[in-house]
Length: 359
Ligand SMILES: NC(=O)c1ccc[n+]([C@@H]2O[C@H](COP(=O)([O-])OP(=O)(O)OC[C@H]3O[C@@H](n4cnc5c(N)ncnc54)[C@H](O)[C@@H]3O)[C@@H](O)[C@H]2O)c1
Image (cartoon, rainbow, N blue to C red; front, side, top):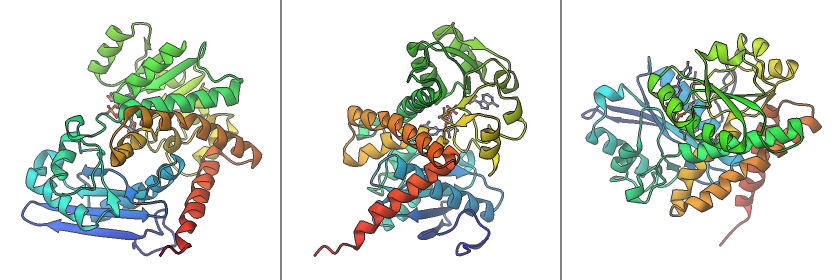
């Protein structure tokens, strides 16, 4: 795929794609800036052993485009970008490599802000920050927001409340049964919010430590063997909180839940699956809308982190989700299409303001 190819590619129309190399430290990185219509592009750095350069490029283009839509609907004055570092972090991550990467981020002079993603963590951001001002997701000791899964889970809960109101008429999960796949950082906080709200929780995880956490912290959570058992359980809501691709051609026909709201990124296994969900009468709230609490949390660092302000903004995911679900009904489209339309509208409306000349 060519970067400039506007045909036959999901990821196109990028403003800028930067290839970065520092041979001595082994750094090979690609920074993708999809849009700065709303402000500097914000998105994390994924450190991953891609099979080849093409795979790294495809990933960064898809991810940076997704961040533009996520940041737009989160109401942030930030555009969409993402970066990938190509290599095995367990083998090649070093202070030298991270700082070399930080210098490339700095060289963009604020067009791109980075953050954590798969394979990069808060201490890595602190190292990168020794070379660039344009980094979020830093440690609390350095004025950072800390663990972003706290507001990610809060936002998912707000999205779920909105979906509950849309489906059952009241914005609460009290008396409903919610199935959580993945009791990791996000799933754990989400389980707590749901139990506090009066929901029954059924969950699964492949990690014994996560299951033990549930047994000791919330013995009322019913644990099942695997995702197959979870999706066929008597659920009202399914919350994918593990890996991507949770909703595929095998899952949709057997899913008992009528509502899907979860923290995982890229829940739709392929384009078109949102239509299958509609046909099966399943309400799917777009993942990038309801899991935006994390980016809201780290973006707040740019102003000087204030947890209450960030939480208030993440609470807004309730209203945004409601708006998307209403628009989907009005325009007879899937919520995924309605969300994309709203995001594009905001990018166009606010981005257009740059054409008003300021002396
Ligand atoms: N952490 C954030 O702030 C944030 C923000 C936005 C989106 N997300 C997305 O939310 C999802 C969860 O993120 P996280 O930070 O909680 O990650 P995590 O690694 O802490 O948790 C994932 C959990 O899923 C479990 N898991 C993996 N495969 C499974 C399977 N087949 N069945 C059941 N459980 C399985 C893992 O054992 C782990 O406990 C990811 O898709 C992530 O991209 C996270």
